[in-house]
Length: 536
Ligand SMILES: Nc1ncnc2c1ncn2[C@@H]1O[C@H](COP(=O)(O)OP(=O)(O)O)[C@@H](O)[C@H]1O
Ligand SMILES: [Mg+2]
Ligand SMILES: [Zn+2]
Image (cartoon, rainbow, N blue to C red):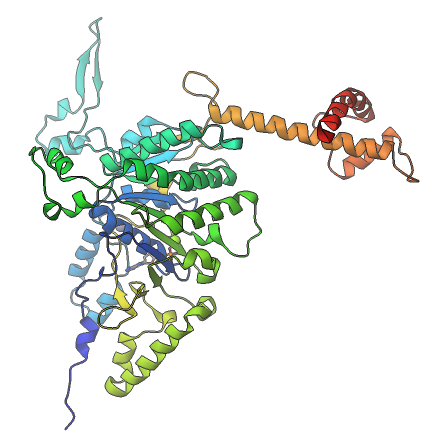
């Protein structure tokens, strides 16, 4: 007789270890692919958070211009709210309750080190408010303080009394800001760049902060790309000279017990203290195969390829996401350890992994015969039907039980994951200034003392150089038209001027042919010199 088995247990089956694919004790590269909104970023964050909790220094260095990478420092207590919601709704059928709860599940936050270019000025007062530096009246009273003394009373020399806010004793600097120069032409500021980067990384390690860079704080895409490229190139060297595994003696000192702690008695945080995890969100946009490639995109791509190849050598880990597997070119993606598929439409699912789809299909068909469609479908969902909390993880090698992949039910990170409608500026009061509205941070060209910033000087030098190149081009074009080789008709200054107009080569400030005439005479000497240099 056929045995009756209760397969409904699969419905409620809780994975023994939902994060079993994450291994902070090893250097690992995770690549996550899937549709927009399928949960790639939240998976990035979940893995990074696990690595962080086990001692890694996390560098969240690429994300879209929406402050997503700053959400580490935000907690909305979504978990509590959802628990309350569940209690209130506990009369509803289980199915309905479960369906309603794919939301953020935050219960905590993490301190970040926000690394920005030297031309970014953030009001300390805005950071203080965000960091809740000063105690609120409610909290002061709640703690038994006298409402009258909620602010500290002080007396001026002239006897005049004034008040100052009181620093909250529980205050934590959730967002701390550090400056990092934008690499200039020829990377002449390499020394200071490396120094600042090293300091920032060591601060993140020591203060257990997430190192965060966000596109929002860069004036141009080029600045962001060149910063990213140089960082990626410099990080391995910094890691190899400054992030060494702790010795038993060092751990003893850190614990203040002044005797060595053997390796097998170290906590995971101590044994992984030297590990660095690099997280790049929407990494597909940086290493896309067919891209209308700007020069800087090419150099970033090369740099990323370079670092991914050597990541293990430096005991680092990497987390990268992209929508399409095809977006990431083979040389880069072949370096992954764990390949993670979030919900992916058939048209973005890679041909290289047809074997996986086929294997899934076959196993599922087999299971349908055994246990029926409903349960088989729960155990082996199609890749395009994965739920918000599901994903397939393909392992680098077969597991001891012969498995090449596994379905995981994953949670959300413990901090507030940026929801589609979340507006960071509204949530935090850290707001970019624009022509129409005053904000709490802005791009500046001078420092607090009115001194021109290095970056501004670099920009001016580059503008000047660009200007020179352009003038050179104007001269050469005009000269060729006025002194044509062969039978071409010689043009008059008026005609040349008109021609320059149509090819958009009229320099700023020119009003008519006269400017051209004066310019041609003045440039003549310079250009001849230039010509001589070229032939030698
Ligand atoms: N593990 C999960 N459990 C429940 N909901 C999730 C999970 N991961 C993501 N989500 C939901 O999906 C939304 C989109 O996730 P996100 O990671 O931002 O997607 P992507 O980066 O792929 O565009 C999240 O805001 C969240 O509401
Ligand atoms: Mg995303
Ligand atoms: Zn939340």
